[in-house]
Every structure is written in structure tokens, then in C-alpha cells.
Length: 128
View 1 (cartoon, rainbow, N blue to C red):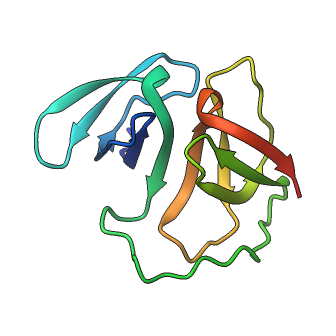
View 2 (view 1 turned 60 degrees about the vertical axis):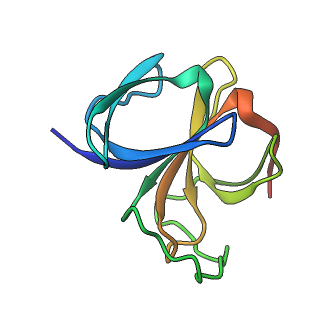
């Protein structure tokens, strides 16, 4: 069983941190074991994005650089969320018929390993 470290950002701006073993991109719900204890059922339709992280602390002083190329390829994409946040990365594909799509950040030195962006929270996406 693969345990995923995730940081969840909700559409209302709040966030939660924890581990999950049952997240699937086409499921409406999954369970998050919170880092402060307890378990919470998460409704994916309330989310902006799910950040799969290397650690929960991150590095606030890290200056993002979007120059990394991925060995598996993918299309470089710029995603702007409805709250104004912009992420640049790579995606194998995305579908507006599903809840969202995965982005692998173009900055491999950052804390995010991958991001699941929810279609409902995306203002604009463009291949760059």
C-alpha cells in the first residue's frame, strides 16, 4: 500500500495536511489521515488542488524555477487557478470530463512531486 503525503487546498482557501492510501482521480471521496491526528473524509468537489509533497514543511525561501525537462516528456502547461495562483509544469493529458488532471512541476527542486488540479478550480490552462 502506497502512502501519499498530501497537502489539500480547498476552494475556500483553507488547507489540510496528511497521508492518504485511497486517493484515486476518478473517486468523489477519499480519506485523509491528518498530521495532527484523526481521519477526515474528503469530498473532491470542495477542493482546488491536491499537492503530493516531499515533506510537510516545504521551503518557503525556495525560488521557483521552471526550467526542468522531464525524461518521460509530456506537454508543458501553465495553469492559473481562480484564486490567481499559477503553476507551470507538465501533463500527460487532461480531461474536462473528469474531476481534474495531474501536473508534474517543472521545478524539480521544489517540494511538490505532483499536483492534482481540479477542473472546477482552474480559471485558465494553456500549453506553453
